[in-house]
Image 1 (cartoon, one colour):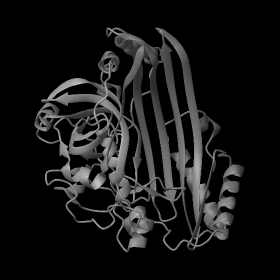
Image 2: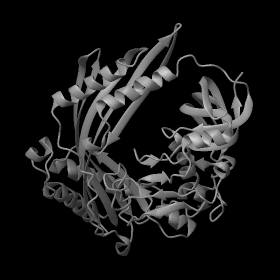
Image 3: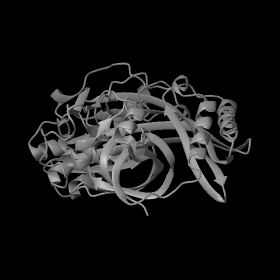
Image 4: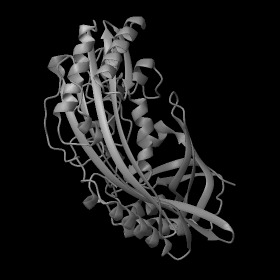
Amino acid sequence: MAPSAAYMNRMTDTVLDGQACLETVLQRCLAKGATAADVALGVSRGIGVEVRGGKLESVERSESQGISLRCFDGQRQAHVSGSDLSETGLEALADRCVMMARAVPEDPYCGLADPAELATDALDLDIDGDPEPALEQLEADALEAEAAALSVPGVKQVSSCGNSWSQSERWLAASNGFRAYRKSGSTGLGLAAVAERDGAMERDYESRSCRRLEDRPSAVDIGRVAGERTIARLGPKQVKTQKAAVIFDRRLSASLLGPLLGAISGPSIARGVSFLKDRLGDQIFAPDIQIIDDPFRRRGMGSRLHDGEGRPVSRRHVVEDGVLSEWLLNGSSARQLGLKPNGYAQGGFGSPPGVGVSNLFLAAGTQSPAELMAEAGKGLLVSDMFGPSINPNTGDYSVGVAGFWFEQGELQHPVSEVTIASDLQTMFASLKAANDLEFRGTRDAPSLLIEGMSIAGD
């Protein structure tokens, strides 16, 4: 049976129609000769406002629906997607996917999880989010944030200010018996401010997203922080080319976790294209460094009860006491490497899964950012980054940055248009964590000190 028109025209808490839609598709695929299949149905809606100059500039409302299907013919797989959820549309989707699976080359590593491997946990992660807010409230908060930024002396204008809310539902089903339903929501407010001095303009921003409004800083705080950051960047100076300490502010320090995750992902290891391909079990970081993935964090932006293939997830150390503990494996890469999947499949259900984490964080250290700065003596505090360049085979790293030069543990002046460079293995080995960790997204880290980076300036 296909979902009712009333269901598709509005979000509800009824799981029945969505699940019935997936059962229809799976039965059609198997009847047409597919040896296995998995499918996902998603429905979402959202609303956002933009303000400028104390007035509402635009309102945008979005509503979408889509279905993704993956079919197997032995060791062949194909996947298709669409938005037509009528009975005719679903039949055509299933027929097309089965035919495609018969025509593609074999993949010896593809396949669904064994039924004995499937997740059964049913914890309440509290990720539903808030009910849809009134448009007037979204507008009022955005105007309040804009006014707070403009109240900071020296801020000339707010170039953009937006406030949004969204909610989605997702149904999953596979021929191995896996069934799941997920409802999630979030709200986000952000703005960018512009300041000018002596004809030179600087820009900075602040934004926050969370599951529930009660966990978000006030609109006034978000606007004020954006304004203060922008003013602090006025009057930048160049620095001499040299090697010096670099401190990555916590706003962007988690960007260093991305290259680590890419280097320890199962597909990268299987292809031999990682600078860490021979380092499993080795001391990569200092002994006090812990990097943890926590899928069960309440209201976490990446929280989940299972991975992208239906396997169970758990709170795990990716790096424990500085030692690289494990690769991030989905079913395909685990089969290729002769290992067991460990809950890091991402996406999946209706398409071949990738690899990813949930709520990854680098644990806080014991020293404050100010203490790390005093320990380093002089160097660069990085507060913004532009276009990092990373070689996944060698770990060579360079990125354009802006921030603040410090000496004797004190900020001296803003800095812009400089490039910092090193290699990631050296950076990881010397990394020190501050105590200012804050959970804000799916990847978080405190401020991080790295000694001896190359700084290209004058």
